[in-house]
Amino acid sequence: MANRTITLNDGTEMPVLGFGTCQFGGPETMIKPLQVAFESGYRHFDTAYTYKNEKVLGKAISGWIEKKLVERKDLFITTKLPMYGVHPERVEKFFNSSLDRLGLDYVDLYLIHFPVCGKYNEKEDTYLIENSVFLTEETNYIEVWKILEKMVDAGKIKNIGLSNFNISQITKILNEARIKPANLQIEVHPYLQNNELIEFCKENGISVVAYAPLASPELRTILKLTGLP
Image 1 (cartoon, rainbow, N blue to C red):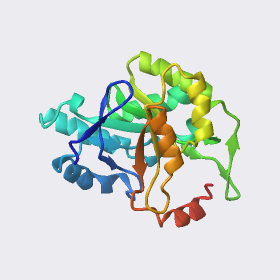
Image 2 (cartoon, helix red, strand yellow; image 1 turned 180 degrees about the vertical axis):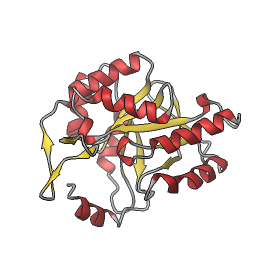
Image 3 (tube, rainbow, N blue to C red; image 1 turned 180 degrees about the horizontal axis):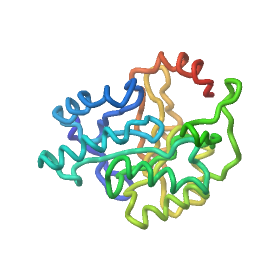
Image 4 (cartoon, rainbow, N blue to C red; image 1 turned 135 degrees about the horizontal axis):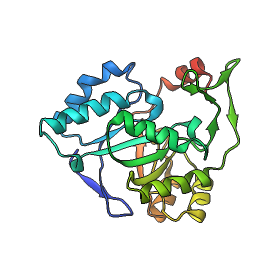
């Protein structure tokens, strides 16, 4: 199963089974699971700036390549622009930071994590929250997308996509995009099937990756603790 692939709209082969790295409890807790996943045949690894574990994944990748266990071209690495980076003035800063943490020359897939821009707490490198309220600011994710297209042109990103976007938001991107989204990552499981959104993506040549396929019962607790919407 881990070796099966689907073809993205630019011809890239993406493994259908990916190893997600969210909510590991801390970067150090991810080392052994990463190794087990790799030895089990996983070659698609998914991370994000906000997961705070890109360095751990990057170190693992470097080790596998140095030991000649795999070549870079046989790995598929996904990471994501954080919500507080969804602003034309901050896109390159966060992408370059992710690339540096991963220790890579390029990523295979780069996603806009959410269709909203959170205010940035630069001191703590996270969301700005006041009185348990998650603060947002105006942005233009069409302009953000155009910046990502230039990064594809520069060879820093192989494919660009979206996460947690709805049909209306994706349509706005499609109407302006020079490079179509290659992928949409959304929560999909028996209790949240998202059939209409998945069908829309199929009609527009956008692959879909499902996160939380076993649902996410812990999400209510996390949102309550963080104050995130």
